[in-house]
Amino acid sequence: MQFRDLKQQYQVLKAGIDKAIRDVAASGAYIMGPQVKELERELAGYVGTRHCISCASGTDALTLALKAWDVKQGDAVFVPDFTFFSSAEAVSLEGATPVFVDVDRDTFNIDPADLENKIEATIRKGESVPKVIIAVDLFGLPANYPAICRIADNHGLLILEDGAQGFGGCANGKRSCSFGDISTTSFFPSKPLGCYGDGGACFTDNDEWATLMDSYRMHGKGSSKYENIRIGMNSRLDTIQASILQVKLRAFAGELAAVNKAAAEYTTRLADIVETPVVPDGFLSNWAQYTIKLNSKTERDKLQAYLKGQGIPSTVYYPSPIHRQIAYRNSGLPESDCPVAGNLCDTVLSLPIHPYISLEEINEVCNAVKTFLASRKRIKWGGTPINGINR
Ligand SMILES: *Cc1c(COP(=O)(O)O)cnc(C)c1O
Image 1 (cartoon, rainbow, N blue to C red):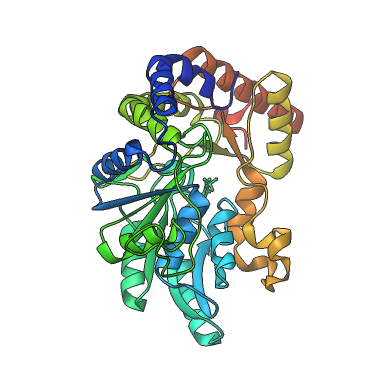
Image 2: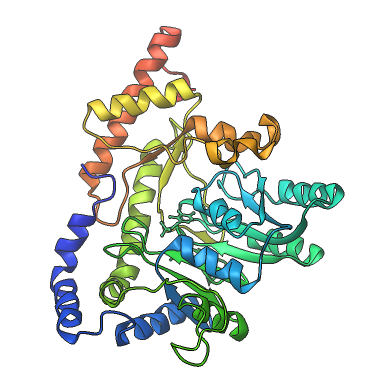
């Protein structure tokens, strides 16, 4: 069984993808070929923003946004403590200070109450000036944007939506990658919309920021390629990758429906025995991950080992809160700063999910989880499970 079966997706889309790759190879337009601009138009149309600026990775997309806003040393950027490393790394790379914010236990996303606390604490401390909130759509579920927007408006902050895992998610009829003042995504192969290498994109309605990000991705170009008006980067999406993404985007709606069906099958089978993911009313996830919560680190680690023994892959996203990563150890944060993030790192486990997973595979995973939790219950209490709940 595959954790995320990209080879199976390729078999389904093979004819279109092979043709797309061959066409680019024959065209000779390997950098910024016409497929790049076409894809950008299609992505902006799908998401519902005026502009899409593609680039070389999701991490670069965050960097381009921060550069467009001139985020620099002395600026504070609020980042959830429970996310992939690069949400914070991009901030530090610009010399700004990431301020880690705890997350909501149910949705895994940034906790608006703690966000408010961290902003006020940063203002009181006076060492850095609050500038940007990075909201991550973790595991495919959009963050709580109504609450985040209120806080951003109150304090005059910009919102950068890190939609690296969020593409295709929805909240109240609006699609992920349209919630931020600038939003970003990643086309890393295993992301919901992935290419066959690295890739990413920025989305915005703001013409000026779009022009700046377009310049920064091409060596700070001005009106032409060889007029350089600022220090920029080399961060473009390859034409081959754009052409692959065009094929995958056409299949995306069907995949989104299929993966939501798979998630519903999981929840039907597991909700009574373990904590399953929560999708608030009005929200739609793309199920970049299907993540359950166990009672303790021991229980989680033993379940993962048991599943491995059964030939079932699973992953811990994420084993450490960002503030505890070696790179941030001297950030001076007390251990108690983001308790929910710390607890989640000890107890979460992501199960295999993708649009092409079969009902048989889902049953196999669920039966293994059930068997494991039932046997642990017997070991613990020596009796049959009460209400079937093994906590
Ligand atoms: C994957 C990911 C990124 C980085 O994307 P790359 O394309 O790998 O650079 C950033 N943020 C989050 C939340 C991610 O999951």
